[in-house]
Image (tube, rainbow, N blue to C red; front, top):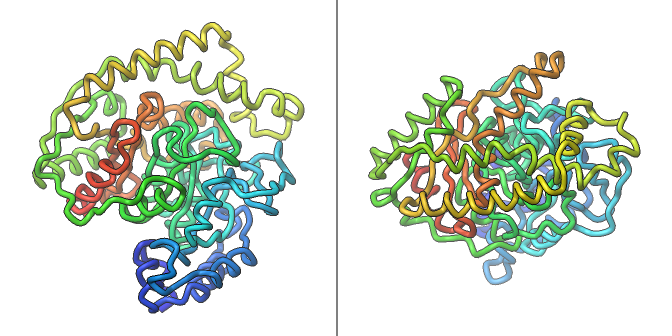
Length: 440
């Protein structure tokens, strides 16, 4: 039976614990044993925390009147950006080697109070600054669909831990697509939350004005429950979610230059949404194109400003491609950066006006399929070009200050994303649950 547990959603496991059908200690041991026995354990987990996990599992409460939340006793993984007391948090970089925080990140503390079990810390792209998931400094996690390609990043290990059945869900972060890309490339659900909705206290930063916390999981229901457990709003009732009155806008800009496979998967998924009753319109949005052109100044400048001192104290320990991406932020002046943010604020207002009549905007989550790992290792120019293309569509959500949800399309490593306004997570999850049924 324990093998079946590893395939279940977090919500199903929580229900089983509440019904007395699943023992949380046995469940945690099953995940720890599966992780330790897995041939790719060290490429997925930076470090397991078995002592903590077993203590937390032993404290889980099965009785309905005592349960701390619907996921009480459910084991999950945490990206190696989230501080956990007494356990190294190194953000996939030798710059932070040996860094051991004294207390948990606020969202981890909230999840622990809600009864979730911390299995350990998963590998990430160095300092979370790449969408590919390739990290030669620590480890590059595997892709569930193809051992020769990258898993997507930067929440690469979080995605792999769930896809390979080594965690019921994984918590990642998303600055420019780092939850949604690995979720899409590993056939998972990924939620990018609105900036500031969940606390980033105790989370190693990349670009604080864009950094967000989000789950990678098996179902939309799981995403809502994890959002609640980490200190977000109460998970919505998804039982009556429907698409019969939904209005979606496909942003054609997000299809330009995309590879055939993700576009075919996306169009087929859009067709199924329409067949389920949704109305779909299409348009090109100049405000999106204009915002994307400012990506370098907005992301790289803040990232380098955040990390310049630490990087330049010891630059040789970094993966050169990531280091130089940070250093790209030095090319812009403070005046350029301020002007870019002022322009972005204007573009955000334009975007909200032009999409106001729609329930969500639709885009292919990633416009390309996962690139070949060996080629990325051998060709730095290819790494740079593929990384930028990987994040093109997901960056729309971060630049425009939106919440976003990626769902599997049924085509391996191809996702469809739903973008909604800031703080509209509950409505987005209801749409996502209806879409999930239409796409399954």
